[in-house]
Amino acid sequence: MMSFMPPESIDILQQHQVHEATQACVVRAAGLFEREFVAPPVQFDLTGRAAGQYRVLRGKAAIRYNPYIFARYFDDNLKETVPHEVAHFVVDQLWGLRRVRAHGAEWQSVMRALDAEPRATARYDLTGLPVRRQRRFAYHCACSSHELSTCRHNRVRRGEACYRCRQCGQPLEIGSP
Image (cartoon, rainbow, N blue to C red; front, side):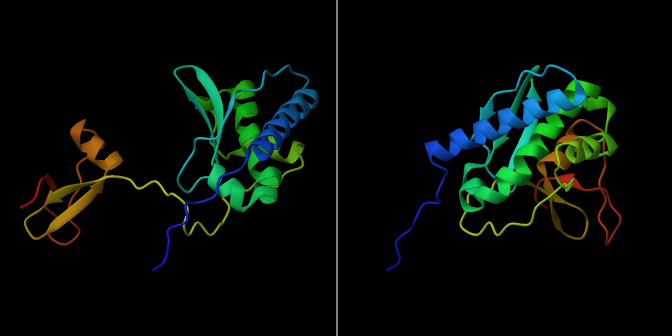
């Protein structure tokens, strides 16, 4: 019988290293852009397929890292994910998030200024790591059943979208037939 091994997370020392690397990256960006930046809080609460995330929630900025992906690919993430998320923070401070594309020219220029490759995604083997799954909602048409993601379901609920079956062309309706 095989025993279940929980996925490994980064330890306190590694968390400290990530905090230090993030702070150093913010300080470096401040010098490069001749601005004073106050580094956002760093959290290790991200799960799913993303190694990192910069987000502003209710006016409060934070950089979130995935402790499981960092544990498995620590050096790689220290070198790539940290400047990636700091670049999003810097773009927000300089141009605002609503005015630019997430991985657009401004973000790419900040990445290059930080001597980092301006790549939007990394390809990691996530086997055995907790991966967030999006909830699906049952819909149907005249000919079959369908599943819509949470985002699409919410668009239908708000009246922003109407999805049709690819086979029969009928609008999808919520629920099972």
